[in-house]
Image (cartoon, rainbow, N blue to C red; front, side, top):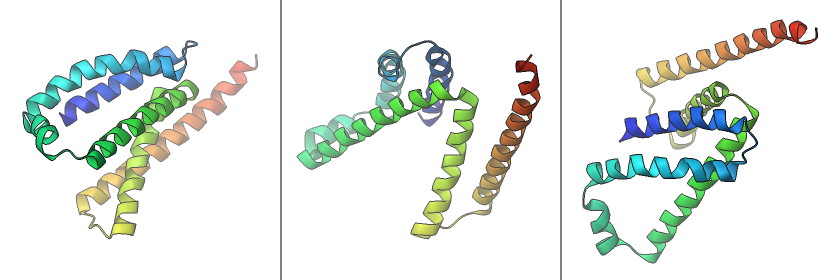
Length: 153
């Protein structure tokens, strides 16, 4: 399910970046992207989780837990809106690079605040990610400075 979610998010970024170049606003974009994502992910969630989800709602759901779930849905909706707004401003690749850098920041904040241990593999992965982000920034800056004189002609 995690791989499927990553594939759906990748497709959403590519599709969103292409469609956001038009005059579509983030609310309409969310309206067009959410149903296909639901159709792909819901059957996979049922396949992976099985009856546990339904049993949870029948036995263990309290109003507070349902409020947490509804609040989580609201946060996800806000994240999608902000993602589509950002895709209107930057390219899909820049958005993906920023997302990878965000994961590195989350890892380091969890190590710093919660004293979570950091394995050598995770540290190496974070180092490679930061190096890749810096490399992307340098290449993009070089491309912009090289392309700028051509645009002025």
